[in-house]
Amino acid sequence: MDCIINNKNRSFLPVLLGTDANAYGMAKSFHKAYGITSLSLGKAPLLETKRSNIVKVMTFHNFDHDEVFRKYIQEVGETYGKEYKKLLLIACGDRYTELIVNNRDIIDKYFITNYIPKEMKEQLENKEDFYKICEQYGLDYPKTFIVTKANKDNFTLPFSFPVAVKASNSIEYVDLEFEGKKKGYKADSLEELKRILSSVYNAGYTGNMIIQDFIPGDDSTMYVLNSYSDQNGNVRVMCLGHCVSEDYTPHGIGNYNAIVQEANSAIYKQYQKFLEDLHYVGYSNFDMKYDERDGKYKVFEINIRQGRSSYFTTASGCNIAEYMAEDLIFHKQNELHYHNNPYLWLHIPPRLLLKYVSKNSYAQVKKLIRDKKYDYTLLYSKDFSIFRSIMIRRFYHMAYKKYKLYFNKRGMD
Image (tube, helix red, strand yellow):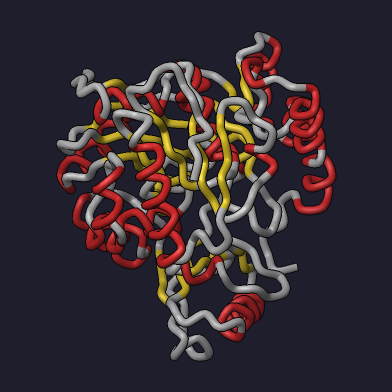
């Protein structure tokens, strides 16, 4: 394996696990902060990191399998460890987070990382266990009922329809293939709910299914919280985003396409205490929804990493990559920062957003666009080429067709 990245600054090299928009957003954040090129490792090349000058991609067949991962991550560590003083390893997906946590014996020989122990990770990522922890710490979450493979044909819900439906074990679920598959569902009747459950379990799923009271409200009731906790478990930055447009494609439900950065000191303080009481370290990413029925923000899940849309934090002036580097590479103890700088992050064209954004968010979004206070993850003036510009703009333009086909459709059909 040859070294393909020759940054002038050899103090450290960001090594990103993943080749998607999350990986590009992290590479862009590192480039904006330090002017360096990152290395991206994955199982397949993806459009988001293609033909880039700020991230170089290496792919390996079945790289998300333990034995393959161990082989190549060691080769990368040996090769680049000779060229750079430190290698900073960052997961850009759930499976890669799992691979880091499960292979610390080899990871720690070559890389610097900041991830929680395996036991804590499994508790927080299993939604049933996560909600029990939320009970302990007073975090609000939607009314929840658990369906198992054994009782999927015979149960009584303790709340009324509509309901939200999703797999408790997201890592097992992601590998399934069946007609009508989505990351999450909305069921308006018992008949529709049982049809969803039947399809999931018939496809080979063995875990539990989470059924939740569907909180009313459009996209503007969704929020996402990004945080970074240093290696001592102290929260260093919190940045809240107000979703103004979600992704409705079958494999994208639960992701965001447009976010406005918005501060909320009560949420910041509550989740800071939660993370520090747990002695959590590294990036965290919470999805939540405002319930107008009781005025509470209800959390759905925590991601043990920065989220796909986390570049909205950097776009709004709070560089998410810099906090990790300052902590792990340069050992600087930054003061706690509660971010507050309204700015629009986009993963769709502005004109499309204005067509579909809710009336609650329209005026604010229009003003931010008019004032040119917006940014995309994938477009970057310092990573310009005609080919990449055309490719990415075409990618964003495809969203027009997707919104026409899928907007507001959460069922199986």
